Amino acid sequence: MNTDPAHPAVADAELRRSLDVGQARTDGRMALLAQRIDQTDKDVTDLAVRVAALEHARWPLPAVASLCTIGALATTVWQAVGH
Image: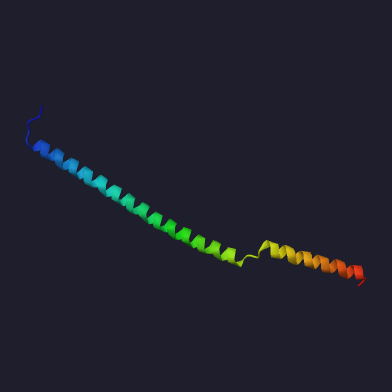
């Protein structure tokens, strides 16, 4: 058994240094994750805006179908009349 009084102080200092390094690594990783979450939130918001714009600008399918039907009916009547 080592009875040197300086040995526990060195071990304590090394343990403290090791804990500080581990905490610094953990803090860095948490900061990186927070930055990635912020970027993901921004991307999701941008995509939501784009989807809303696309939904607003699209033609409603029933209206397109009605226009095609009216066009086909008009063409049929025009051909039936003999023009």
